[in-house]
Length: 581
Image (tube, rainbow, N blue to C red; front, side):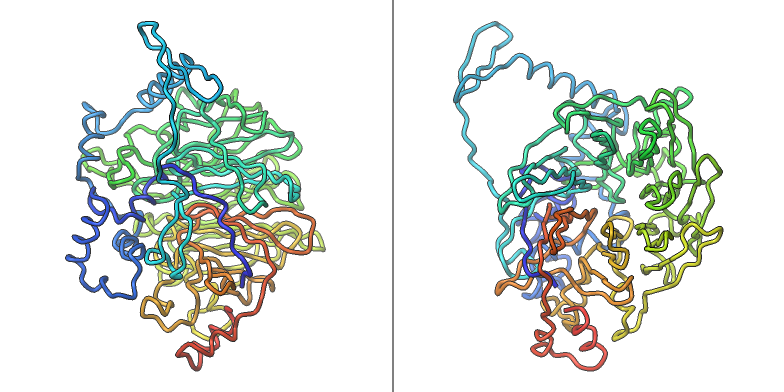
């Protein structure tokens, strides 16, 4: 349980579909009108116990984030008009728009206290601007999950720290679904100062932020989370100045740009050879905005998989791929989902030259030095179109004291092809690693804490993370288990399990969703990233990114299991609560 959850600050940006979800967008309409229509159609959701945010989110979840396709409304019409005669806006159009903006910006300069813009006719106009709102991103109590007002923002997709972190200086980068790239240098302060960076990256859809050795900061555009508004990207970019400026890394293979119309979901740079880079790509979409669910992958887009360069991008090869869904041009959505996409790439912490890749709808792969890729974990229905929209595999690596590599692995469809589970291997570099199931579907058992941890939409939000130097710790996160919450008519055996933590190698878990304040702060659901800050102190600090923005947890951990006595619980459900809290 967390003593205090500190919201880092709201990104005042349009964060992809999350803003529509939080505001109650349904079918291209927004605000209270859409909410009224939604409640008219689904009266069962109008129970006074349900916060409005939950109602909107639950409507979108019907069928899962990845399958909630809606193609209508004025925003979709405007998009279609800009895309004509095509069904999607081409990358060339995106790049042209970005170049036009940069050219316009170069025609302006600033003087103290005001901006001076030079018009095309050569005249000078002075305008003084001040913000009028919205400001702060504060959501009222009725729209939060704890009944406590909270600061939220748009969907945040990726985080990376530059450590070690000190109270006066802690560098944190955040990538967002529709708001571009952000940086703060004081992430441990009460109110961090965030700065928008990466104006020379011609896309606001960020898939991954990755800081390699020697100070190189890589940013992959395009969002891999399996939602209908996970917008495709326009390339891979690198900064050697902590984000002050970026240059594009070439991503051509046999005359095709593998980063165009796709997402860059993950990056791994060889710690000993900085020009040796792996890039994982996944399915992403064109034809969507923050208020609609239309999507389309252009036919002829590059094969998704792992791409590899040994010369910093001058030449690339497709290093790993499996069969993926084929675009159907006659379908308004393309009918292709996530099979074959890469969710994560990691280098082994104890065996130099060994790299791992997790693949949607297949499993976990490993490569040692320049050898072939070997599949070391296989899902129960590998490559099946029936699980293409729902399966995702995520993992974390931990160095054991004896030099072995531990693998924590989440399989989204382990139980009956529908429900997520956690597994662990303590011999990750063995020829055939052994994976032990840790999750249990039965209430009151230790394994129930990791059962169904990403709920019904793992292809959209699924995180497995382990802090460096603490191999017995593992964190899992995803969406909220609404059915367990008292506020939503559940038994109250947990606080939602939006983020859970184990300190005994994945056997038992505690629920980190709410903090222990008198009026608790609570985590927004739908988590996409979790990173740890190296502070050198005794308390653990981590940052988590969700559809509600970025939150910092900064201990100490406390026991709140006494709260279970006030809930209508007994037997196995009471045992759940006492373990989680």
